[in-house]
Image 1 (cartoon, protein in one colour):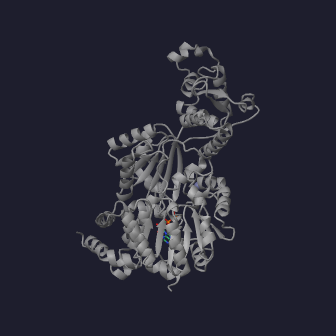
Image 2: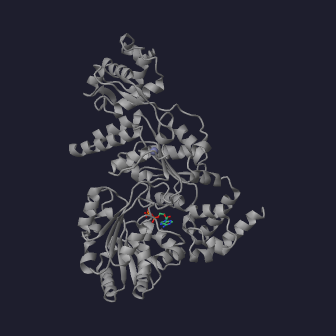
Image 3: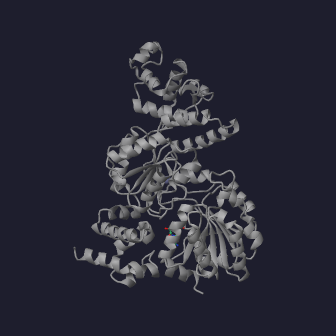
Length: 610
Ligand code: ADP
Ligand code: ZN
């Protein structure tokens, strides 16, 4: 039997295990049960794939994500591993063929949908395999699907205890990227994993650079962000509503971007087609509601942009976490303004959820707003929310890269609050700012607001600065959004001590909008620079073209051939022989013999200047 290390190198082409992988793999190979909590991109697949290869028999992987199974199986086949899947997308004959392969011991890994696993026919097959000690392990992927409280609840997952009852000798490994303690406890309880060893990784995603910018003109800001940092990259742009998804996608398209819409209101065929283009082609931008993303395993999503606020820190972490699964530099970018706070509060308050639920949702929104307005390290703030420590000063977030000033805004806050009060607590922010700046608008005249004591007292700040003040006062809860008055602002109880001068208010100083950043200097880490420079290198383009050609030939996404990280290493090391090529991370024996010559030819042509 090959050792785990040999399997890692020869099959997967990786030099070393990451984080807890080795401990997990050894534990499962020895027959132990495991619960693995690892962030997206942490490398969960290897944790069951290597033990399945190392142990006699077949590894059975339960997964709720039908769309993913095909990709996983394609990827394994590329590595020379015999794998298959069983789910409702197969016709009867194809399914029979898989049963036959299992029966004949031809497969090392089988992905099954939970409802398929529960059929008597399949359980019978498992029993037969078990009698000959031919089940290597059970892996339960996306194990948080047992949780009734999560968004991905799958009732069939609850029945998976049957695995433990009927096949007590087969090791089980449950995996999830959902971090919180209640979900973890529920997984343990529901899957009878009390005896399982728990492997909890850090949920930090150091390769993601988090930024939150003040929303001014969101479209132009997005355009500037894409142009300066992601001119050719695949990414996701999240919007709150279907309508905004459609409009934003259409607008990006007009501007020359390869953008597609995705939301639950599109018919299934369009959704499928758009998703498939996103996965199989390079540089496609998906503009989507949160309906998009679950089960998107594309490793080279280079950015996730939020044009609207997510609903919670959990949502934000999960959505941004879809960037940079491959460990290469990625961006999480959000444009956020007062309008977002108002409309999100309104949405939560006006829904017909029970009061209790609304309260929880408002609290979650407040935590997210706190994050948006925070002047501390973003990585640290996110992890703290999930109960994990981070030393801060990450060098990979806006607040660490360009430390944010705070200023004593007590007086400005008093003006802003008193303007809300004097105008009768029913106007929106645009009018309030007009009053502070002393603008003679028709509305001012209509309500005689030029007579107010707050009229024209705010000249010390610009319109944009007032907007920032109001946003922060709303986010901090000094000002409430009035549901009856169509989003008019009114004072909250906590505004009193500020108005009375008993409490001071410090606010963050939002950066002035910059036209075009000097991105090179800004990029920070060396990997970020190397990766950004690669895009200008003709050899990088040539390598990508070759990869796409091979991917098209075989009908798989390009990252199934080689990941960007592998291409980047080829670019930087310029191997000249198969042996040298074989030392590059991500090139195992099967891929070396399949694609080695093709890529060496590309390198040779580049070297000869052709
Ligand atoms: P997860 O399922 O936890 O999101 P994956 O299993 O898809 O993560 O792995 C994320 C990426 O990291 C994949 O591209 C995978 O090939 C790569 N990877 C995993 N383990 C290693 C390792 N030990 N060395 C190098 N790359 C790895
Ligand atoms: Zn930081």
